[in-house]
Each structure stands twice: as structure tokens, then as C-alpha cells.
Length: 189
Image (cartoon, rainbow, N blue to C red):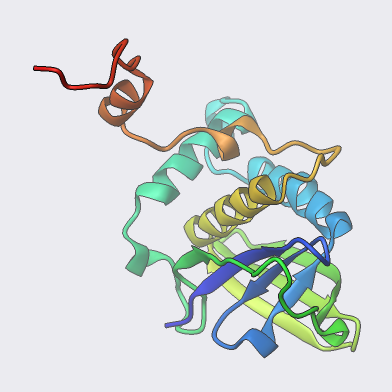
């Protein structure tokens, strides 16, 4: 089973996506991040199931997204080569510069009606790196990508849709985290 790791390289100001070996990382620029946040999120909204019921596309995408995040991970892939788990990587501040030949030039996404999804990453070398997903898997991938964009702190002209950036914490945990701290944290008995 293949896992996807995302990271941000501050010196190069690029996001990287990797699977197993650092030399296989694909480097993503701000321009492509704008595409992902705009086009891919809109594609998921436009193709979200249930249009015949009349709900707006954002509402349908929100429901599908929440269901995808709650679905067991082993149901992510319909094909054995689809990448399931996602992780956020870290990069040392003065880490090595990315290999220019692994720079992503263009991305193309395809969403089929049967629930299969594919992202093609065309590198500057002409090589095409393909990721296959189910719709829930693509929602998870996009969520992880959105999280690394937040970490990069790029002020992109395209903001993620509300359904993508909404908290996924259970209400009980939110209540604990939102509870104000006591006036003093000292335990004087």
C-alpha cells in the first residue's frame, strides 16, 4: 500500500509530494496550487452526487467530504496502486534544493461517473506521474493538500471552499478546546 506525504520547502518556496523515496518527490509551485484549490475543488462540487434532489453543489460536496473523512481508510482505493494514507512531512530550513527535473509542469484531473478519479502530474521532463483514487480518496488527498497549503502560508487568490477547510473535530473535543482557561494555571490547592 502506497502512502502520500506532503511537505513544504521554505527555501525553494514549493510544496513537495512524495511516496516512498525523497528522490521521487514531485515539486508543486504556487501556480499549480491555485489550480488545485480552484479547479479540482470546483470539479468535486460540480460532480457531487445527488444533484437531482436539488441541493446546491457546495452542500452536496460538503456532505460527500465529511463522509469521505469518516470512511475507513481501506475503502479508499478501488485499485491496488491507489495511494491511501496521507502524511505531512517536514523539511529542514536549510535542506537540499529540489531536483528541477521532478518539477510539476501541469496537472490534469479526471473524474468518472463510476467514482474513479485520476490526477496526472506532467513533469518538466515529460514524464507523467499518475495517481488513482476513489472519490473519498480524492477528498482525503485534497484535504491533505489544503493542510500543507495552510502550512506554507501562501496568500493564494483562490481560497479553499468552506467544506474543505471546515473543522473535522467532534463537537465534544471542540467544546473542550474552546473552553476558556482559568484565570490562573497555578495549582495552589
